[in-house]
Length: 317
Ligand code: F6P
Image 1 (tube, rainbow, N blue to C red):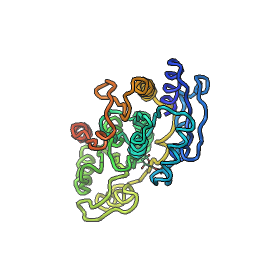
Image 2: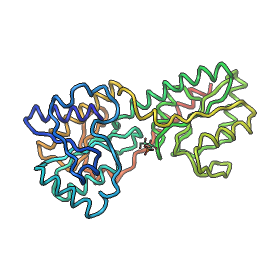
Image 3: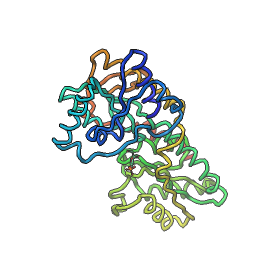
Image 4: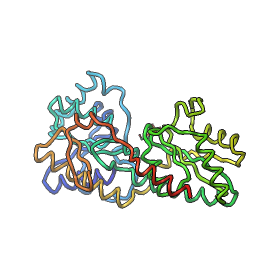
């Protein structure tokens, strides 16, 4: 997100526009936490993960009082346009501000990459690379000890991280919430792999995989540990579990993330200048594309089933 903030501030500076940064998202809007940002304020941040503006969830913003305060603070500060960097929840808040006459442009930023109308959300590529690096490290010990590793990745309710990292990392099985997991089928694939000489395997599971597997058991805590114990019981293979957790949310952003964030940040400022507000600026087939926010919410981002099929073909031989 820092690369996007930098692009917004530097592009605005190029067009002689003044920028205020809002700390802690909507919480900061309500509590008047504005800081002046100039081109020098965003020096040396393009390579840093996270956000210099901090991030926080706001319980107050959804209330009429919270929104009124936020609008009042924006008007008092003379803000004419607002760039919101975030995901679904942030954009819903942005729509309320747009309805109140504050011009808003949203930039998609979530490692889950589950925002519709854009192929790409800021943070996703860095997270996928972090997961692939972790899989590489785990594969070293899995092959040395000839074990099965169940690795859980983030994604809240979507499997985009697991699918891309599974394909890139060569995971033997990828389990995602969009496709019902057949644990007996997973175990059978592990046994077949073992018979082919695969003495170790990696099962990559998205945290949102839960509910009733074919075994009829619902999962009410980390899926990976349930899957690990099920695999151990059914196959007899030595199995270990790793939950990657929040390391997926930090680290130096990849070049791809920085480039996307820069393009989206710059375009967001230009859209505000051109009066094209109430939209999210995204990337579709490498082209920058604006979509009205209400249209974004009407859709749901689909998983790429071709990716899923390919990941399993390549890992099953
Ligand atoms: O939405 C991004 C995300 O990282 C999800 O992948 C994850 O489930 C969630 O946020 C974790 O939220 P928190 O940081 O509040 O624990």
